[in-house]
View 1 (cartoon, helix red, strand yellow):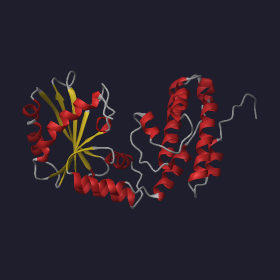
View 2: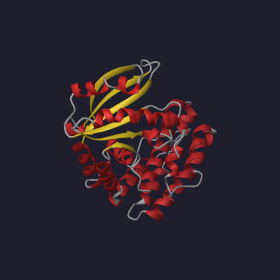
View 3: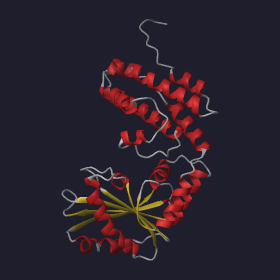
View 4: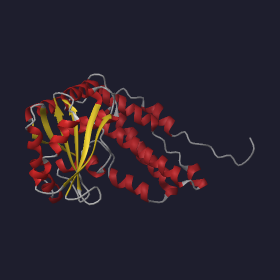
Length: 300
């Protein structure tokens, strides 16, 4: 179901899409993010992604943006035009991006984030993840997003990508679960004793991140940015009971109990991996997880 915050944002995106669809080199136009999934809220931007046969020039992108005002019938403020090397400096690794603010400027306008990449870039990302089991964060985010978009142009091409992305390799799951559980750590006592709350919460949020990332891989779900955690956890059939509530309670509860509560949650995750993913050395990772810093009050 599409909520009311998403509905009118989708209508804006549908008015913008024909501007890019009319460009011969543009093969697909997508609405991405929480709005595309019908989960937008009062703080949501409108995120549009386009796919080109060639690297788009700034002139082409600027020409498209200049048509927003007429298409939407409202004032438009254009931000800068950027070319971001997200995984290498070739055209395959670059994400082109610009921001547009509707009805005002950067302080008062609704933000539209338009990003562009080549069709070849999408092919490269899919090959890297599905064939070579690349765990680059941006590539995993793209793989997650492609099956959760609203297609505004280029349905057949996007459907072919979605069919490929649906085949999550077991080897990738094994690699990611091993990576994240090997980094799982809940040694908080020294931070609490010293009153180092910044480092305590850095360690705690890192521990929760690695635990959630391991569960995503266990469930064969590509790892996105960990926003809207409840919705993300709802996608996982394999998980500890009351996962979101427990993660949030650890962050918001009694810090002196955080380590014990996290230990219980981590133990359930280790058990789920043992039961559902063969070939992972859970015993070694569990042993490493429970190594804690020793407190010394007396001379050795």
